[in-house]
Image (tube, rainbow, N blue to C red; front, side):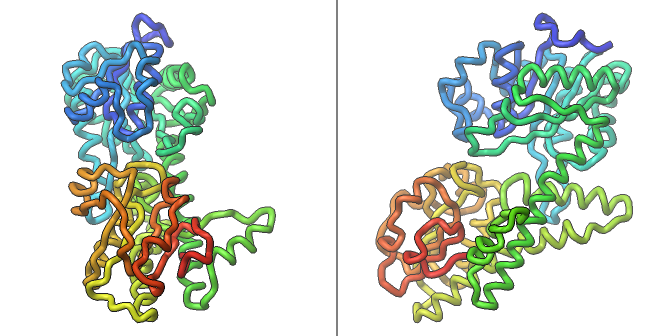
Length: 426
């Protein structure tokens, strides 16, 4: 039988994975109930215990408002938990197939501490059916308990927007679902206690999983459309942003802009939905064609810069080019799946000396993840400058002051600077 709904004396929560999703969630629950925030990264736990969040999502003072939180890198800390929330990454492999290794590893660990009446809730983005078809069998096998008799599952897809200080976890409406009607009510009321924006109870776990998958696939397809427009208008010698600004005067025009699509969500989640579609015999043409367009944008950017340099009479081999920004989005240190790294390596293939400056990125993470060493300062030394990420710190830059001669190319991918200061926009 399920624990009684929201009794403070009996609910003991364990949040597995303390990244952009898990940490804010754990801190919110830690305001009300005993909560263990678990992560396998010992350094991460040590920093959190000291009240420091390397992702910059949580301010140091915020830790004091969660009196019931405990951070741990030992799984034994989960012994007393009866509600487990799994928020580990679900990436893709080099063949763009779902990689469930972290999810299934976390599931196996949770199962070792799962007891009768326990509830396991997943927030990691997956394809429809993954919770019940892939995770539940592991929970049953390792725990020896029976699904929907001895333990229950829920799903509540994360909607965290890294770098957004307004739409924080409590201020974003939360989808909830459970494996039985009683489990669904429990999950919904559990989240309802911390989510001030409210909750939406989906009719099943599969519906909740599918909703999350299409949220990001929809945005990916829309961005791919305007990216394709950029490819077309480049050949027609038309400024894409001029076209979008003109079209945007119509009341029902959707205002998407072209650019690089990276990160752990939009550039990954559509492949999960495509994988599931293909497993039931349907080849998703729109989703995958959109992915191809967006995946090819770094090559387009690099080639356009090189062509502009050649046209300006700048020798390409041995030229110095500066990339401003390496993270996947502005005002955020996350460098997972950043497309700027692909621009870097593409330009290097032309024999260009590529330099990268980013005040938000963690240098060691960039080195480990992408093999790139960040600059610590800027100089007037570049034959080409590319604004790749629109961090606030770049808004006040005199971007032309970074160029070593008048012919240098300034490529503004984010349409941030005054047009008189740049050579071209995306």
